[in-house]
Length: 291
Length: 290
Image (cartoon, rainbow over the protein chains, first blue to last red):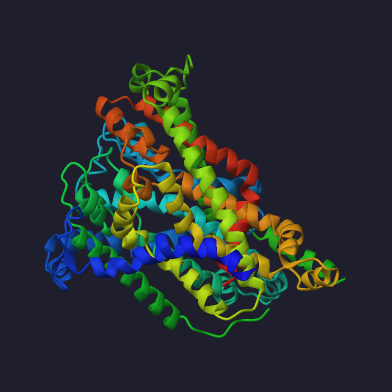
């Protein structure tokens, strides 16, 4: 029975997930265009080429880590802020909770469309708003090359905040009320209660969410790739490891077919996740709090 | 008695409104207000003609017409993409539950050699970014002649969602009381029958959560579809919307794009309205139970 129950899932998982994942490490050591049997072994050549590439560091990696760190800080900051607020009794709480969560289940391609219109120079909501409040002389190009990354980052944060908001706020709700009330009676401020009682009590959830964020952020693809209307080569501001690796392997208009090179980036992504996992779990190791 | 004191204390604090309270409430209202405004603005604009939209982007629609919807639905083949998405996502979710539920059950409640190793192996998949296996998987499917095929995409969707789904259901099966199986065994109920007739119905909520979360995730999936589907006739909604965006933005036909936006978001919205409880339950279950 055990074998019968396990094998369908395990077979699919091993064949279509683990096997290609393992093979990736092998492929990343080759110079290969994919469609010939001729795979040329070049050792760590793909990695040394990547690491000595200025564009790779200054654009691709900078954006990847920018999303992880700045995006993470903003997303968690907002999620915490909103969840702290919603736990106080507010009218229409359920409705607002749903509304805050909703962007995280919208198709990211649709989000890219929505935000590129919000930023639109001539007819966009943002510049329209500036005009409406009498600031018509300031009409910035929100998506000019030097700020494009930050513009997209705002959209990413808007999309993900609701997801972490729901996780954090439902964890916060399980914190026993009597502790908070007795702390309040003794005159502790909201801030102090938040950092000395609430945070330690949702510690495990927080760590899990942060690790989950790192995995999500490092592989963020859809919104960046869809940004700017189905061009095959995303603008530098929209290039991170995920879009860049896709481009080098499967990009349609300018096909590079550099399968080994591209897979090397996949391997780097995997190691970034492993690294974050190890660092976060080591740094935050502490005893469970029982309550 | 304690309850009384507590509620009195709460009453006491309620009156005490600080500037912090005011500011934070303002922020939360602004955040929600922004979303409401943006969504209604998109729907409002999708009912306008391009001419009336560009002359006043704020104006309420005077003569709402569904022309944009008909246009993207028929002329731009959103109908086909919609159907493709349904034909890919529904079988994926069903297949996923069919293979994952028994596996999760066995891993959660039976003792056998390698149980821990297999559980760890499966959970490990949650940490692997899909990009790692994109190229090898592409050529694997290529050799199996499953590129640009819905069946191929369904298989990929199932395989790649297995770790998360098993992890979620495993946590759920673990919460069910052990005595149920023992009682069933004493009554002479075989293990397979026990699973189907006793454990599965009890795990119903978990199964629904897993199904809904995977539905939403796969409905919005873009990277894998883009990689493994190449022909226009097999495009899923994400791909179709992306292609549509390319051509409509080029011609400046924004109102049609908004109609497409609305059509794509509607299924997730309906799902969300009716099943938000299962979505939230599943999400928090994943985060809380390690």
